[in-house]
Image (cartoon, one colour):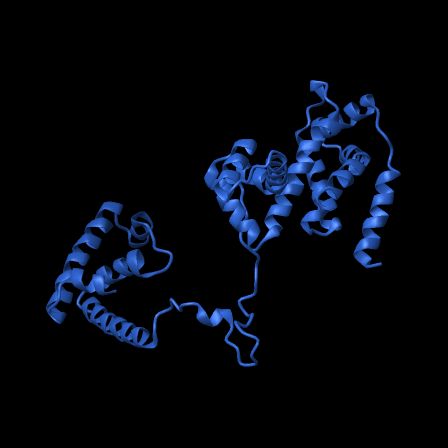
Length: 295
């Protein structure tokens, strides 16, 4: 027996031997957790109903998930139920917890069914867990009266029966019919067969584009350096702090450093930008807007 199965078996036995809580004790423990965050009370409450979680988890084994993972998700659902439970409403914890346990397990199954997300809305979740059952029932009923349903008619009836849009039925039919496969799988059985990933288009820039762009950027940086040399030390410092460093600084912080007002720093910055633009146009013969667009 695999180690995982042994662990699950032992955990089941422990859960089945846990105490059974009466309504009064259950309410007392729920209040202790809600009001005092008593972790011992929470542990006792969750442990007592773990058998319920295991029972519900076992109903989802047909979806291919490991039983140990399903039980773990059931435990997550129980913890959430305990955190949301209001003992003053007069409802037994087991009744309330069933919804949270089922929701946690269903979310896990849908997350792990495929590499492609199967769905997240309530209608998609309802379809995922009920589509095949409803489809089989409708096909049996049609066969009894000698009726044959085409794909469109069947999907219409499924949508009506489950109460979801027709487009959701069609979408889920397609996703459940497909299967994941590796992009490293070969397209043919030949030894030198091409892998599926070899057919994917490469969206990255080609070598010629990279070389051309790097050359253009180098030229633009040279022009900018030459234009910056035409500014005063203060103008160059303010522009570099405001525009050319990763963590740009505020007008106020620069003003405090240089002993100037925030408004004065703004004026110097504006004048320096105008001056820089003119120097760039003079040195290159192109407008600053054209060069910015090229970058």
